[in-house]
Length: 217
Image (tube, rainbow, N blue to C red; front, top):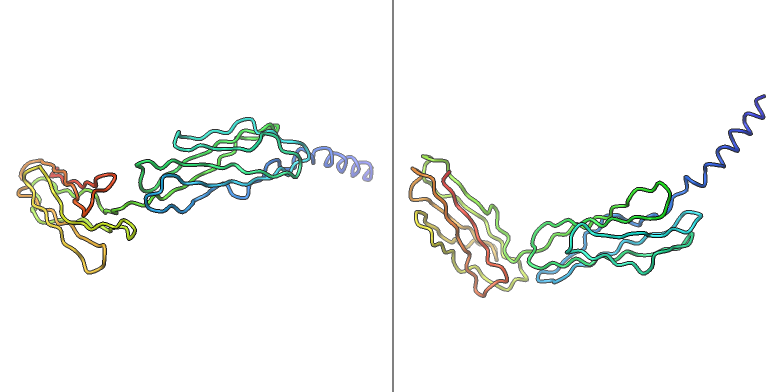
C-alpha cells in the first residue's frame, strides 16, 4: 500500500510542477538612475527573461503618469529568451524626489500584473530647508532661519531675498562653506495672523524661481 501511495504522490508532484515554474523573471524591479543637473530626461532599463517552458506574451505595458514612456522591442518571448523594458522619464520642471510605476501584464495564466518602480532624485539648483517658517500668534517675534545650498553645477550665487509683503524683515547671511547661505526672517509683530512670500535672487536667472514662505498663525 505504501509504494503505490508514494508513486501516486510523486506523479501528482510532477503533474503540477510545470505550472509552478516562473514565467518572466526580472533582473531588478526598482531602478534609481543618476540625473545630472539640468537634464531633460532620465532613462532606466528593466531586463527580464522568460524562465518558463512556454512562450510568454506581454499583453500590455503602461505607466502611472504621462511623464514616463515605456518601450518594448517586441511582445512575445520564447522559453529562455530575454528582453528589456526601457523607461524614459521627462523631467520638465519637476524637482526633488519622484516616483513612477510601470505596469506589465502578460499572458501567463494566473499571473498578477508586474510593477516596475522608477525612483528619481532630480537635483535642484537651490536646495532649501525648510521652505516655510512660522510663528504662533503672540509668540516672541524672534528670527527664524532657512538653510540654502547652491548645487555645485548650478553656476550661480545667491545675491538677495526679496518680498512684496509688508510686516517682515529678511537678511541673507553667506556661510563659510562655498555655496551655503542662511536666510533670516523676522516678523515685525505676531499679534495678528499674517503671511509673506520671499523670492530668492541669483546672479543669473534660473529656469524656475525659488520661493520661501513665512506665516504668523
